[in-house]
Image (cartoon, rainbow, N blue to C red; front, side, top):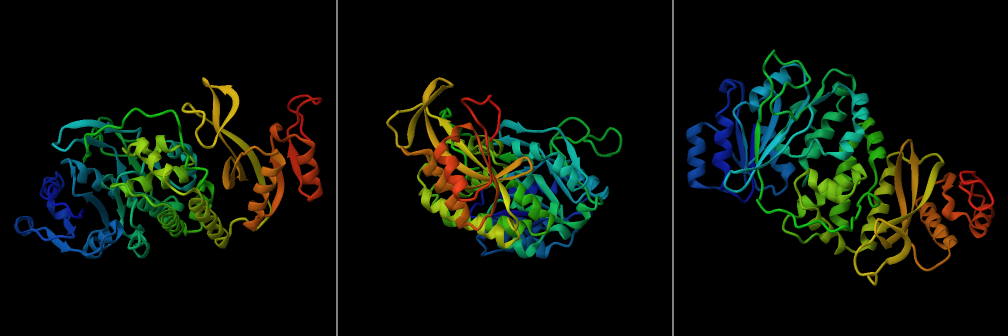
Length: 458
């Protein structure tokens, strides 16, 4: 077990004490503390308890854990942040799961405030992923809830961790560990399951001895502050880094974490997040991008205030973000994406607006959900199965539709993407657009309206 602490000594001994007060016999596990400070009281107590105490100058979360792994003798790694605690049954639960062949284990958590008072629980229905096909079956569930959130809830076989990449990970180690488990060959071959146990008071759906259900196994300390009421203006990061299906394909090629690392680096370069908790905000952006979901829902699933994330997104330079979105797509091409002509769908989006109608970027539109105003933009997306990968976006200004169609296609071609068929809905059914596409030799399918029966295609 690796306990990590960075610039904070307040909870370290409490965390370590919870690690030592386990129902699992002490000869079956070791405790290692990695921290970037020296404290006479803490260091003396750790020595008395027989706990390995490592001083580290590394400022990254992954690098700190990497140093603990180098010192670890066991074959299973469990991480505990200094402000979290394990309940007494936690390691016993891990021991049983990994004894049965698991390669990764994750559990729900109890959330407490600064003084240790319970303020909530994060639980989910327990399930196991037996192989990559199982992961695909649960993909939609992963898009709705970040089951892998919180590194203190996770444990993984040491052999499954790509330590070379871990040493470079600055944030979202929990996501990195999950991808590590997904990538390894034993999981792909169905010989090393991934177990998610979110139940607090019932048996998990894998074979524990009769009557030994999992109890609450971790307490996570969070600030007691609550998000203010959420405004009705949702901002999606998905259209910036909408890469779910591509990541899945890359995972099958055993380079998923390298790609994930590139996404992290791109977001670091593209966004100037000045908030105190910039790491959590970037993590929400990464997860929203991977799962193609709204920031609000993603933030809520990992106990971050969605309004704070959106406020920081509003302060970013869109051109800078879009520049690195293009860089990410180019990196995907280097990894083998888009080698063949692809199907591209062009869509018009209205994000309904409820504030001042004079706000920048707001346009009048059809009445919907109590308003006639919306942010309007158009996107071009590569269609891959039932997923879409957004590759170009443009605001809808006071111009003809053929202009933003031309602008989107120009961006697609600049990325070196070859269009097999362009899909357009009835909103694009104009003579100018049809003539433009024919003149440029672009095959297209367009939904018609007017003299044709609605639903006919051109």
